[in-house]
Length: 250
Picture (cartoon, rainbow, N blue to C red):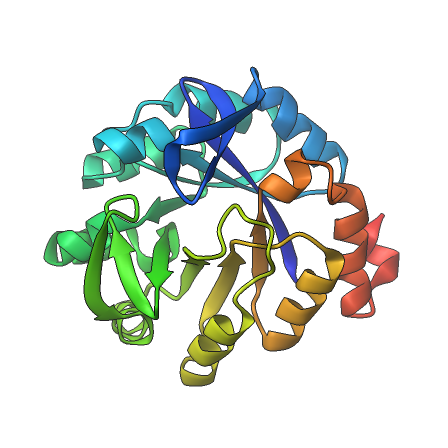
């Protein structure tokens, strides 16, 4: 099956969504992220993607308490990122209840330091967050373009033990215009054993089906859930049906 992973983006303790990373274009979807997480869990979701947008903007984790409450109040597997800039931060995130630490710009800008984190905490503790514009990485909240090709970047990290990433095509994010299937297919053709999670533009079960057929292992969905375009419970059942396991969908 393909894993359905709702996104909860946090600003000042509240669940929001941005359009193409623009903090001036945000919509608040709920005052208590725990209530939202509980609703996803009740729908059959087993994993959650939490982004501390305050932390991502400032470079310092700001919403660790939200993680603690969701981890303590649900049985969801959680990956958490935003503002993780040191191994101490990574330990704090794991200690607060996350199963996986998401690392984006820090893994690019301070690669040698990040490799030390891997050596100490292990590759499976990390999920790479890779934002892509025209096939190359963009960092610093999409503000800085690099010359680093996404496939080369992921291949290098795979050799060091980090074998999973969520990849966002910046041009698609928050616009509900469909996922960048060609990008994910290109990555998986080069790295067939990589655990790739798609993010950005997903707004229908057909999008999920196409991504499943392309080989991605999971999909991160945000706005489509909050805008009522997709139902989490129905999508979980659909994901099981794709692999012929309808009976496991509850």
